[in-house]
Length: 173
Image (cartoon, rainbow, N blue to C red; front, side, top):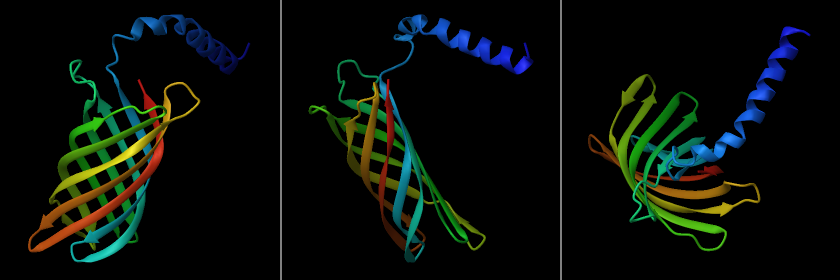
């Protein structure tokens, strides 16, 4: 038997043996979700408003057993345009509810923006207010998310009012 075939067989055996043990791990993972998707932003580069494409990802934990509708969220995004990059990392609270297969939510977060344009780097604070919908898919523990955000930041004398729309896959645990 070749080494690669033995490695594949060992990996398959490990996976098959770990499936019955998955029930034991229910207490180790907190309730929450992980999201990853594509994003479109109408963003201000200090003064000029431009369109950007990029990605958006977030992790949400639901740590409050007495308040199961309130989650703690960390959200990151990256936007790209020729000669310009913008990254946002924000954290805050999300309020959600379940209505059939839908899970509407609103959130308020704050963090920092890292914008590089023409070799100059800006790092203003950013406030992110938004919401969206998760639609439960037929796959167990997976949803599809539609999300919209308003992001406000202020750098020197310029106020930046930006908008972001995202969509992608959510894994609930």
